[in-house]
Structure formats: C-alpha cells, structure tokens
Length: 229
Image (cartoon, rainbow, N blue to C red; front, side, top):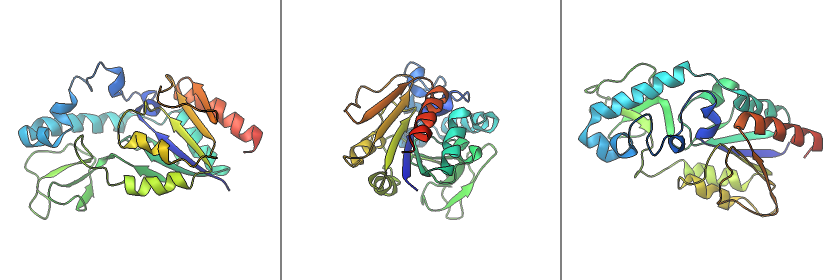
C-alpha cells in the first residue's frame, strides 16, 4: 500500500466554519497574533490569551468535519495515509483519520508552562490561576509564534517516506511547516488543493486543484482512484 502523506492547513477547516488568519485582514477573530499567540502575550496578559483559546475551543466543539476531511479518511482504504496538520482542531480525527500529527498543538490539550510534557486533556474553559502538578500555570498546548516546533522532527521523516505528497488548504507561508515540501523526494508526485494556489510551489510534477478543499478533494480522489496510482 502506497504512503500518502498530507500536509493540511486552515483552509481545510474553513468550510467547517473555522476562520483562517489569512482571510481576516491580518487579524484572527479580531485579535492580532501578537496579542494572543506569542510567549510575550502570555507573559503580559494571560487572561486575554486564555479567553481567546477558550473561544477557539468552543468554536471547534461546535464545528463538524466537512467533505474534505471525510475524503482523507476514506482514502485510508487504498493508501497508507499520514496527515501532518498545522491545525489545532480535531476534525481529522472526528472524520476518521487514524494517523494525524499536529505540528502546532491541539486545542483540547493543555500543558504546564514549565514542562510541555506535562499535558492533560481540556474540553471546558480554562481559567487563570489553575496550576499543573509541577506548580506551573496550565496554558493551552499550542505552539505559539516565536516558539520552536518540536513535532517537525517527526514530520520530516514522514515526508521523506512519501510515495505521494498532498498539500491541502495551506498558503505555505508559515514556517517551519512550509519547509516540509522541500523534503519531498524528487520522484514523488506532488498535489496541491487550495482555493488560491500558493505562488511558492511550482514544477512539472506538480498537479494543482484550485478550488475549495471539499471540491478539490473530490476531484483528486477520483483521479487517484481511477489511475490506481
């Protein structure tokens, strides 16, 4: 069974009602990134940071997987599908995908501000002053801007093993995630599904589906299955 490695971004969840940063004039639900998604924001105003992620958590709880998520789960019948996502939602898992690596963390998890390995599930609102067993405050288990992305060490080997590589719903401008495309081996077919194809990808082996994720994924699924790649 061929290995299909998929890199997904906010565009795949947009049709589920989860807004993307690039569609909101540099603001994320009315907030600037610097206000809510950096270590400096946490040090300066942790209440605002928790409020922002409490809102995101509730939004994800009410969202449902869309057809693009479902198609990736269906492709597991024909391919060994490994998903690397920049998204913090759990829509891939709820759609049935079994192998999902979250590069930037997960909205339904929290960790100690002292120890990222001290982690627990969280489904309700977080409040300031809640302490982890090591005495550190609980914070969202999200990789903020200006922080390292440790899951890249797991993602790079996955990309290198891909027989097919697919990019869905990402502008490929957020690093280091965007650099994963550079690790695709030269003879690996490359597919991009997005409503606006990133200018940064090009090449003869590249096939693009410039459309909403759900529509583009239907087209790609039919092509993959018909060609028995």
